[in-house]
Length: 397
Image 1 (cartoon, rainbow, N blue to C red):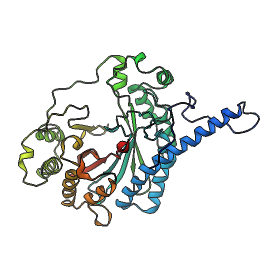
Image 2 (cartoon, one colour):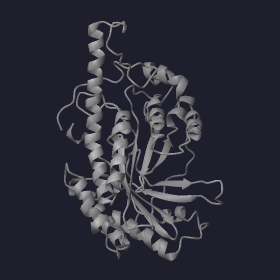
Image 3 (cartoon, rainbow, N blue to C red):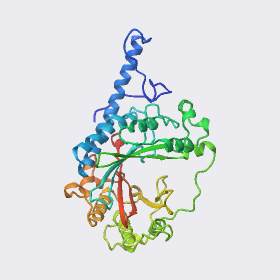
Image 4 (tube, helix red, strand yellow):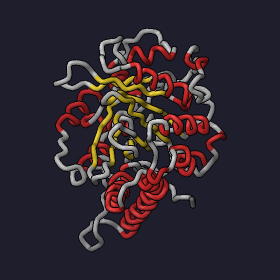
């Protein structure tokens, strides 16, 4: 893509509002001609960055929806929302001249992650994506961009209630009263460890094929914990043997739905993405993952808690970007796993064919990183699989 004009975070933005203040021309503006021209130029620069996000990420999103079989109306609605609301929340597009906000969303700090999710209800996937709304006044305590994005989501997600969002935003992040001061003074005043990621809040959207949108929000409490001088960890030494995945997914045998068929599928998925892909590859199942010194290494577990459910529902995140051979291996292994279960893309396309067409800037076999996680959960007696993809927007810098 062509180079973008330089945009410095917050240079011409009202620090108490996320949206830029651009007065209308006229004799009552109280601004000199130079100042007025300055503000208009800033608006044009901002538009260029918004269009870049929509072009580079939005077009990939459209391709994923097409390959998942969405109708034209659904694609137009979901792409329209991304272009109108999400692109504007992401702040300056990556360039060599733009200061990089180090988002915790992905390992190269791309603030966007894309996903296909397969369930037992249908053979084709649902398209999803997550973003960190960086905004135009990025700072550790700036949660205004996320709140603004969710407010703009109301017209796309009917009945969206932000009460719990506001509750957890206040409880788990440094926000509101501290936001402006931290943006100006930096993290040191709040005793935040320099090794702690500054990301605090992600927004996620599941794009339903009935044209509706499911909205999610993720909170990362590390900044607040560090500012209070307390640890947010209470853990035992990490265990990376394949068997631990079975133990956690069954909650130590407490969940009755982990049948032999489901357990076999979990083992098969492990071999598909970490091993040779052959169903008889017992060697991969008999050895632990290698030790990797990275803050996103290791296996992640997600537990869904509901007031009316006696036990949580677990989901495992396999960080393939650290432990697989390359993206080619991941794509081929997962493609075979899905095909054996009747899962595909629209018109019979395979997962491998789809992900290969999305990764335009390099070959899948050239390395790791386009895939971030492969996840699996047990639903209705079968394994539901999702794949997470990173656009790798910084590859040209």
